Length: 264
Image 1 (cartoon, rainbow, N blue to C red):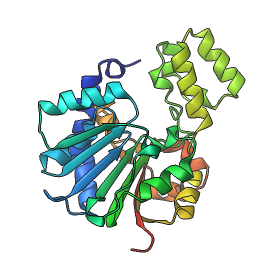
Image 2: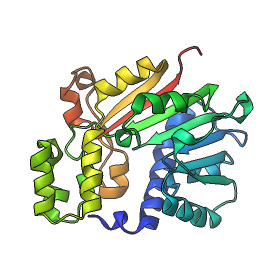
Image 3: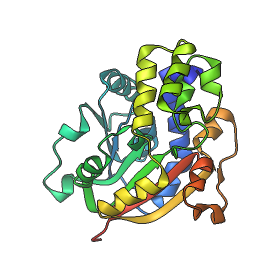
């Protein structure tokens, strides 16, 4: 397990740097960011992704189900700016705005969809928060990529450093985690991720069913966040490989989708 998984402030600053270097410029291509822009992140954790948006003057809101994450987010942001709202709740129980002006220009969903069991219902609820002219950014690791099971959170080096072990049959994977003396909570989380796994083909079916339009997409061979985590150079998967269904999942460490409402 890397130190950033236990020292959440390091993780917070890592996300802040990645967001500033990559997300801001990328999303600005599709949506002008101003002091009037409303930005929502669902599954915000400590809120690191939102820092650069807040520094631009955007009105940012973060939602997370984990109370400890929201407490940290409020504490960290108190040192940076006051232009942020953080809410601890189950997003599916969060009431959507009625008025268009209260909806959001940009919604971020970063490394979240792969944890959601009811993905269709979740995306439809998310849709009700997006302005008619807004954009939704979704980033997630393709399930079959080397560490698509998030096994890097394990404490044992065997489990945290070996690729593709999450693709083992459930019983074998569970037994391996127990053999390596992983904590029960960690095992439960990893098995839940395995159950909720998300690959490119599944996601594209979901967004079509939920009537989102794809504005842009990128398949990363080396995730932009790996620049901060591992000092690696972010690299897109070769374009020809983007079209090779199923096989592309094994080489895509991060999928980026920018979506808008189909009727816009």
